[in-house]
Image 1 (cartoon, protein in one colour):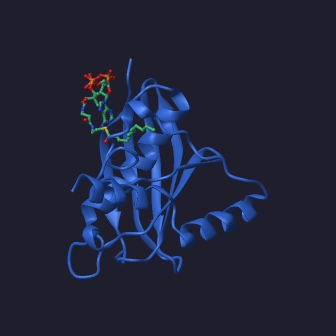
Image 2 (cartoon, helix red, strand yellow):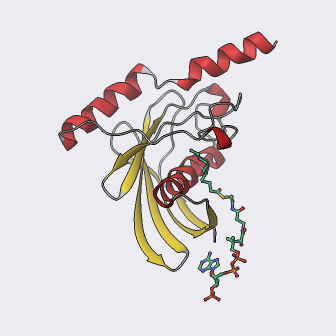
Image 3 (cartoon, rainbow, N blue to C red):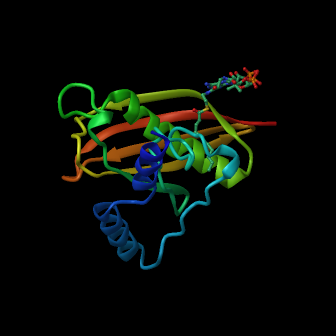
Length: 168
Ligand SMILES: CCCCCCCCCCCC(=O)SCCNC(=O)CCNC(=O)[C@H](O)C(C)(C)COP(=O)(O)OP(=O)(O)OC[C@H]1O[C@@H](n2cnc3c(N)ncnc32)[C@H](O)[C@@H]1OP(=O)(O)O
């Protein structure tokens, strides 16, 4: 059983071929390689990005100007109604890209105090979505971030604004 679980984890640690192609297209757009945000062993069990979490999403994040980029391809186990990605997990993606960006930028944990999210169009299982986040505003330890998830056809799937508080 342990061996099977390990195989599942290993399989999902790397970006799939579609995600790699989309990343290459972004790099062409920016005219340079995009640098991947480093992983942190201390937070290896993070559900969204942790490499040690056997049921995690194993996201990879890339620095873009004033923000962050990630791709995700939902699998069967991520659905709600047949064929649709679960809204709670879409929220995880947006929460994570915004939180992880500010954590990595500032070097201290940032806790989500509020997240406002609008689900605009469904995300279908098996389709690779683009997740982008930007820092919008700072006031003391509070940071306002915006995030958007885009479907392969360019339609906005979900967008969010979050308020994060940096640890003292
Ligand atoms: C690679 C490895 C990756 C590692 C993994 C990286 C993961 C990152 C992504 C995940 C992010 C998450 O999901 S974090 C997990 C989910 N979130 C949480 O667990 C947070 C739970 N809530 C809390 O812990 C607390 O409420 C805090 C820390 C957010 C705030 O508490 P506090 O420090 O006591 O602050 P508090 O006194 O309440 O407020 C201080 C000031 O901020 C203001 N303030 C507080 N909240 C708000 C708000 N939403 N909007 C506006 N203003 C606010 C107050 O009015 C106040 O203003 P004034 O009176 O001073 O003017």
